[in-house]
Every structure is written in structure tokens, then in C-alpha cells.
Length: 89
Image 1 (cartoon, rainbow, N blue to C red):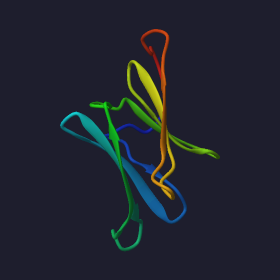
Image 2: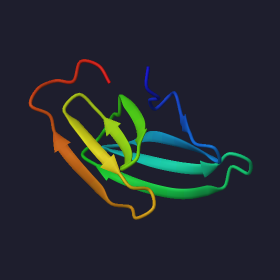
Image 3: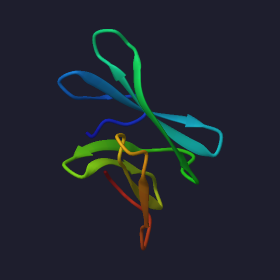
Image 4: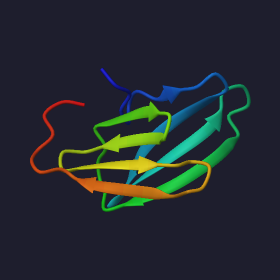
């Protein structure tokens, strides 16, 4: 199962979390050794993420109706509305 809000994703040097805050999800990257925050991106209209997956193009954040690509380095997001309800991520 892919990492979700309660299952952080990790790289060699950091941990990436998706945290629901009101009607948005914040994708936060922290240094694995120090816990220092490295990046934070706020994704609006994404109240509850089901999964967070690392890809070469950035992180993919899933909910039942949308997939959003998150670039932690630039802070850019690109959302894709799904044609139906996501059954599994």
C-alpha cells in the first residue's frame, strides 16, 4: 500500500508527510536526521489525501476525486480531476 497521511514516505535523506489542515493538505518534507523542515507546499481543495507517492516528476497526492502532482522544490502543483471515484491508490 502506498504511503498516506498516516504512513509517511521517505527518501534517502528526508521524510515526506501529507497533513490535512482544514480544506487543504500540506505536503511537508523534513530532514530524516535533524527533523528540520525542508519544504512545505499547501494544496488547496484537497481536504483528505488517501496516498502520497514519489515519482521522477514529483510527488503524487491522491484523494477520491483528484490527483495532484506536487513539486516540493518549486512549490508548484498540478491537479487532475478524475473521471470517477478512485478505488485504490
